[in-house]
Image 1: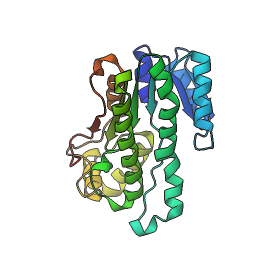
Image 2: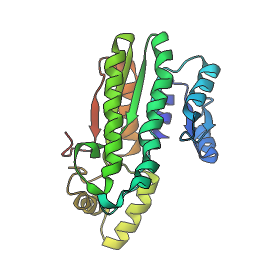
Image 3: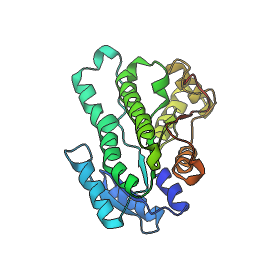
Image 4: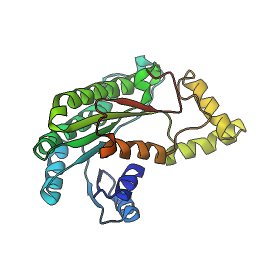
Length: 243
């Protein structure tokens, strides 16, 4: 929601797409400016293509595509990530954003260009076995996005990847509260604990990113201010071993 709010604040006409109609309605009300939404499970066959077609029919064009869909479920070991784990992750982490790009690129080319921003993860740049399946699929998505940027650059389409580390979302805030009590420490202590859990690869900072900071980067990459940035993988993690 932070990305949508930030884009709307700069004048973008925002259309939200997700599964939860209630959350979408609340978000659209907060954002204002006539924000529209589609309550759709994009992992279903043809859902991505038909939704984008409906948006284009309503608005005439899509100039900016921000893909933030994903599924994040860790396992104890790579040995525990069987086919069912990979199958559950492959649609939201790879195929849905890939389909969204394929559905929007032709119109962007016809209209003189556009900006695609894909939310990936900084774990594509280091090893953490409990998330090997998630990171591998996000790496594939990131590489595909870079290829999109290369192929369609001459037609004015830019495609960039944002690679966040830990982000202070509502779900993470609940986890932080529990860990503060469990560890008898403050937020900096919780961040240090998480860094140890992630083999000191999560961040060099003593805090996680705020959603507004990620939204600022996404909005910049979506704007003409970033018109010469294309095919980039940009970490936003307070510094890490990402490379």
